[in-house]
Amino acid sequence: MKKEILNPEIQKYINANLNADLHSLLLKKSLFPEVSMHEIVQQIKGKQVAQKKFPFLLQDGIIFPPQLSLEQSSSEKTAVYKSEILKGKKFVDLTSGFGIDAFYLSKNFDEITLVEQNTDLLEIVEHNWNILGKKAKFINQKLENFLSENKDKFDVIYLDPARRDQNKNKVFLLEDLSPNILEIQEQLLSISKEVIIKLSPLIDLKYLISVLKNVSKIEIIAVRNDVKEIVVSLTKNYSGEINCNCINLESEEKAFSFAINEEKNAEAEYSEPERFIYIPNNAILKAGIFNLISKKFEIKKLHPNTHLYTSEIKIDYFPGRTLEMEVIDSKQIKKKEQFNLISKNYPLKPEEIKKKYQVKDGGEHYLIFTQSKKGKIILKSV
Ligand SMILES: C[S@@+](CC[C@H](N)C(=O)[O-])C[C@H]1O[C@@H](n2cnc3c(N)ncnc32)[C@H](O)[C@@H]1O
Image 1: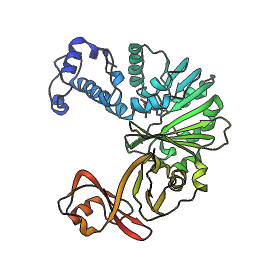
Image 2: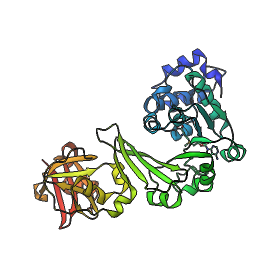
Image 3: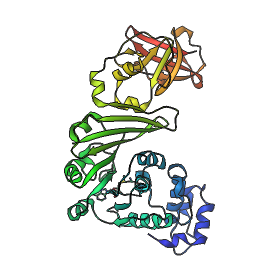
């Protein structure tokens, strides 16, 4: 970490170039002998990312790490959500990274420990936390070594394993993450009441439940309908129901909670389209609770493989989109008309539909191409 980057003249230059084209900036020579243009651009990039992802770091004196660590960090929004129910005395984040999760998740703990193998990164985090007035023990070690030497017990252990392999490809099996949770899960539960692990939205939930022990809770966290994180909690000696929470942050939609076994025991009712059509949000779709949704909200499914639901009377608080729609004949679609096109369980993709019916994207109306139990149908919003 180069503290020279905080020199007021250099900071002034960084702030004046926040909207500059970084590629052309990189071709220029640094005006400051103590730092390279590459180092300056790293700070500009950091501030740009911080504006969207962690605005709490947009203050004087903060240093940003290289791009990969910025990308790997959680966002302030999801970190704040995850922090809400956590409380205790001792918290350790074994994969601190840039420390965004740790900063928020540890807010209701008295003793905070951050473990990170990357020396430069941890130095930056320690510097930033000093600026932010937040105290912690910073341990620059591989977590495996930390665990073998550690004699402490914790209330919560948090891990956000690195999701890139040596070739920088994204990986989604637990065995391919760093650390490999499968190898250390028992060791973790022997020193902490609770272990919380953040995972990729692409990970399969059935697989997770089959390979992890003492799973007590799964959170599926979306922000504006984009699933960002799967967060699994392991609780010492837990063998009860696995509770799951689907949340769509920055939306009006309420969280939907259920026990994993409920889906196994639920049966969906089926119907041809009625007046209202419901499209579950992506957190619900990720949970795969296609029958439970029909049962819990008393709405009918259009087809076993079509995850759209219907009812004659509008239900409130559906976790997703509710549209008033009618079934139309393809001849009723006028050329050049604008639609928000949705294709679900239908042989043509939206691009192919657009070409075939010569319609355009946008406008206020929805057009859904799908299948009910009777066959292919087209629905138009009214
Ligand atoms: C996805 S990042 C964590 C991001 C963090 N949650 C945040 O919000 O900023 C994962 C971090 O774990 C670290 N890491 C991976 N394997 C590790 C190991 N075996 N020991 C210590 N640190 C490790 C990586 O260096 C990386 O910085």
